[in-house]
Image: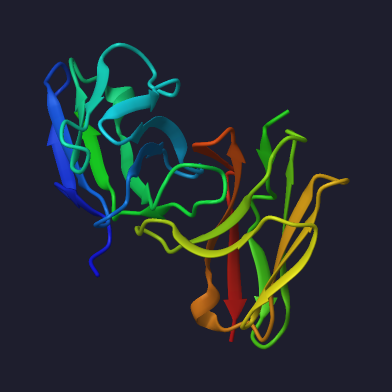
Length: 115
Length: 110
């Protein structure tokens, strides 16, 4: 079946603008995760959804970042008043269910550039 | 101290040799350990996971876990040029998140 998909693949925006990044998980996967990866670093956890609710948003850097998953499938990561430091690759992952013994599979990522 | 530490490399290995990648972690409560491969400009791809002490083999890959020493490694036998990539070690934190090391860049020389 299809893997995790993310759109857009690239997003260039200006400082101060609002952006939305979309993630479509593997069909049947109930857990969805957002990570952010800067150049030369490993991915950093942002937020995790189990179903429709954000079960852990401890990785969101500040209140400019918000994510939703209204129907328990597709998720949107929203960034308000973007800053140059937000430039990174935003990765979405999904797993069949939550828990430490469930493998997470990553999408291709969205490369965000804030000018 | 970082939660998950890897030597950033680059690690250079001749084709056909064994590549050995190492990772240490700080949280003794960690239960699951993952190795991801990431080609330049691509997203991480899961290649191995291990939950119990000892070795786990899958084809040319062997993951090794020593919880007492808080150490996990990945061995790649008969290394191929296509194995050239960055290898990310990830450790679970709680039930839902992974903590990643910064990755080790591996180059296989023909």
